[in-house]
Image (tube, rainbow, N blue to C red):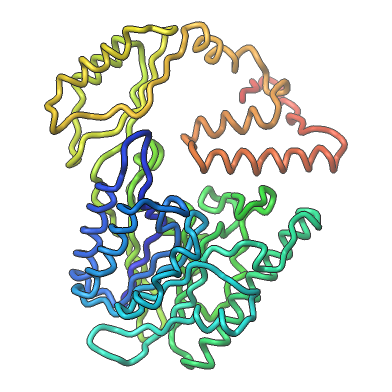
Length: 431
């Protein structure tokens, strides 16, 4: 059986004032062709189909148009689960109609884990091309709010909440495995999840908040039963395998930030053999346009903007940061004149302009030398680490919030704040 795993489409999102629907349409056209070329049996979409709970009519039309065209590719099964950006009710509303196209939708978990009605709807039989024989099953787990797990996060300390999440998710997946085994015997099982999974020593296993609670961090991989051959995850916007487990993130297929534009976007092609062995191929998604940052003085930015070139089909979206100016009213005109050097049909688009005064920039540059490590708050050190790693946007906000919570707990537990380690003789301390 061959499966394609994708997630985090965020249909309807905009970068600044620029809608990304055209870029998303190009991706879905490419994905449709891939499903046919690779003779895919099943498509799994692991949440965050839309960017908001009330997507625009254009975003909805793009979603339904894509699903209507899948049958022509030969794909037998499509499984779509809701993410934290989706409205479960909105995704579920056309469920019966989409079932006629072999599209199975699970927008949300409506009852507590163990309820037979929910579990039955979340176990999806999978068929291969040209056959009505069931060759596997998908355990379609959407984003799960703690309310539907019976967890009240205000009642317990963070450790108790984490343990409750861990036990509840394990019970949910265990129940689904038992139900699938009762119905389909020992056929291969694929599962989904829209959450943050994995804790370890590598950057691929960093802690991150899930749900509404900043101190939960990531769930451990032992919430997944050994019987599951592959877990298709959504929520994190880059593609990677979680440690040595059977769980993978596919990441967002379209870059929505400067950081995401720096790394390739992927969908995952998953082959499950007759012996239950799994092979995963990360297939790069063609880049329609990039998101870039132009930084420098006004003259430098204007010069670079006028001579800017690119190799993608569409011109880039630009975040402009101008140094050395303080309220220069002539800057917008100069930027417009630089953009006019490009033809109308291939003109970059500026989505953000920041002007930073020289004094402010110099103070920022001087601060690491003026302020030793021992004088910095832990949050300041962590913010600088994020700067060095290029972590921005929602990912940065969540990480900083989680770190601040940990720092606060450390201070409360020990009766003092974090302290810098003693400096070895001759060693310079730097943030």
